Image (cartoon, rainbow, N blue to C red; front, top):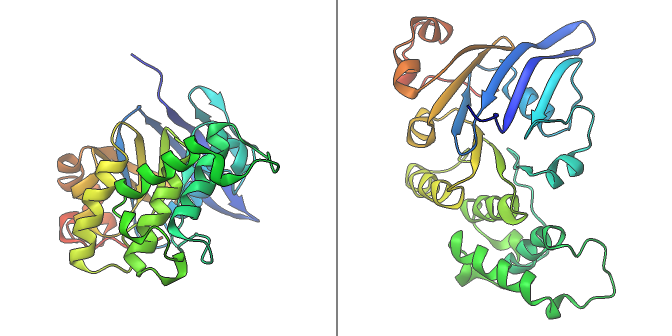
Length: 257
């Protein structure tokens, strides 16, 4: 059996005397789409912060493609092939859609800190940014400043920036939060398309999104993984339903963080 692309081994995180993540074990295979769900305060966002390098684990290991990434900075983890979006839209508001995406592709194409190059002359970066714009359906908004986009368009742009560097593992933190039902439906389709062939982990409270996207669901309760299985198996899991105060998971009663 092939090695998991992302593996958490007895992962723990405490803030002072309060243990938030309590021995999480999780193995994610390349190409899988995993939804992380759980009640408010379950530790889902903390888990994402540990994986993406914003927090350092108190103990345990995080392996990306077999390499230990504990203690690495977020940008180092990003360069190893893991990229993350945030709950709060994280874009350059005073740059255009095209400029935002071009910023996202520069490092992955090897330009790093080449300040002497004219951006307009970087054909490969410009071509990649143009292609990304089409993928996220913002090609008609090419020169619009990011701050002037609708909320859903800003979220789409952030997804574009997240995948711009060619990361193999994508973490999305509540990507559809604040969207209407129609926007959410379109966004699920967009996420499926732009992450095709990649490994996806998403924190989500909207169970329609979870069941529309996920191959497997990890249920986090009080900092532990209560269940990790297919959507149908999780839906039928009595322990999971009990964790949601007796409400079936399929009824969309899941909480936020």
